[in-house]
Image 1 (cartoon, helix red, strand yellow):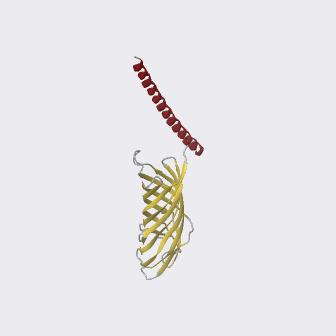
Image 2 (cartoon, rainbow, N blue to C red):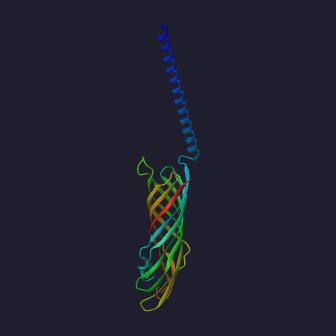
Image 3 (cartoon, helix red, strand yellow):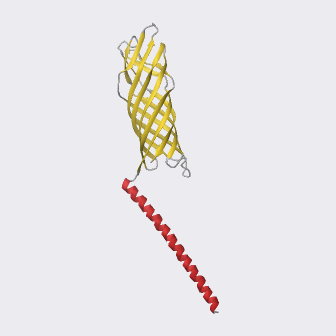
Length: 248
């Protein structure tokens, strides 16, 4: 009788000891998790409701510019400038505000050369601009399960600094003319949409479409293209490109 009782007591004691060990380990895990959660909450509180995390990147685009309008007093606005496929390069940076909102600053340069001038022989020149813009980009994963593909869309406004290479041609009467830019700064906008494909938790590749447009740029002319010597045009382009984005 003594031996079975002793064995039972030992089994119960071992069971209780194991349970106590498991309870302590579980309690330690809970304490560690609570400590981590408290630390994260403190960091979030210190940075506000939406913690700001910086990121930066660079992009290159092919620039397709539709036929450009030329406005001249007395004649009005007509389709006049035909462009070759050009290019756009940009660097950007900003901060994420929460999980879905990004506040972004872009600076870049866009350029398209003139391929032809409607009704004119020997048209040549280029239309380009540097720009600085600020805006908002909204981004979210396609599903809560994966964050590998993240669609985004955004809108930015800012300033463009036109660089109009002298546009030259000869009108139907054989008279030569030239057009030059004479305005240093105009307003501009950029609308964008695309996807970010995560390469690592911090690095992503971007595939993006953008629509870029400036306000009218004042021009000065020589020759018979405009009797007043004044004209204007804008820069409008559809951008298609790739880039890299790194989150610090």
